[in-house]
Length: 383
Ligand code: COS
Image (tube, rainbow, N blue to C red; front, side):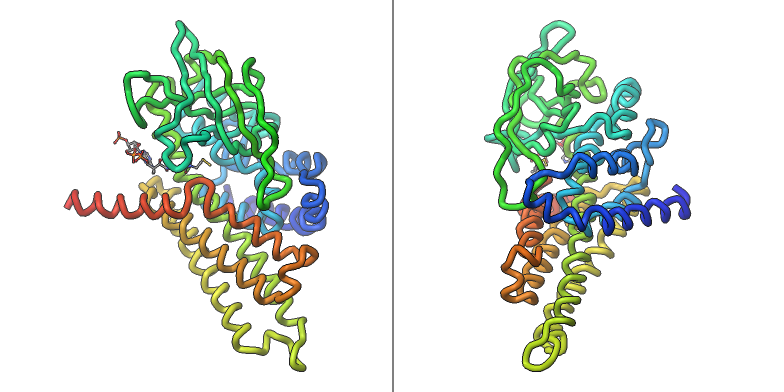
């Protein structure tokens, strides 16, 4: 995208955040729902199509550009990002990265317009961090597969028009090699939903179990058309998703630092603004250092991704660092706000709870550490 058009997009997202999203934050928290009017405005802004290539009706941003827009968007409560998150990220990218031309044409334009939401169905009751141990079965039956299993904590499941679903299609192959990624339309008979999950934070984002009971899906719906490659597709999607999550952490760092700075400058104790005290300044400075380090790492990893280079280790390091960093920033924001930081009215306690999830979803901090260390050790083996 040329610079001028990109800046226009960034500016309209910035305006949307300040004029529409931040004023709606309390209502979303209270109602546990993002208003339909705001979802519609997100469609009109093209936010569902950020990552869909222009050839398929999207805006076709590079990863660096997408990260910048997501950073802008998540200066409002991260719940708003969650509305588009799975369609822009993990739900659609399997098709973008590994899909056949027919699959791209069939699904991407409708995702880009926001007509069809996409969800990513990998996690199961007994397969979280150990994704390759998933048990959902896809049994071949002529030209179709019959899918049976339960997926857990599936974001936007109830809003989705399709699932990118990982299931075990090769009964004789254990582990990762036996898994295929399927496109499962949400209106396929046999799909039902569990109760909406009650969560620590992120009120207004929707997650629940999805139960697939003998769902019949054409064999042509295997992403890329070749069975047994679904785990790799999921891992590629997550590599990219981890850069996107770092942008979410970045946006929330910006917001929390801004709130902390303003509060410290206004709040007076001992006859002066608390920002005048060096112990408060230390908290502000540490948060700024965390944010700048996140920004630098995010930009370099996104640029490397855009150059088509291998980024597995870097994406994990970025996700690990940025989400731990925003956790520290949120904790300091509560501390700077003192008693007010513990009170719902000031929103800091809410954001503190909201960002806790960032260290868990799309791979826990501990999984990121494992990916980083394994890659380092592989480098040693290879000499
Ligand atoms: N890109 C492409 N291929 C990849 C890959 C990546 N980033 N990571 C792994 N693979 C490939 C491997 O090369 C291997 O292929 P071969 O057998 O042909 O060599 C295959 O996938 C299996 O990889 P591996 O042996 O590393 O799998 P493990 O079972 O050891 O698991 C982890 C790897 C732990 C990294 C993986 O299960 C994971 O990321 N878990 C977290 C899941 C997650 O983030 N869940 C969040 C829910 S979705 S919001």
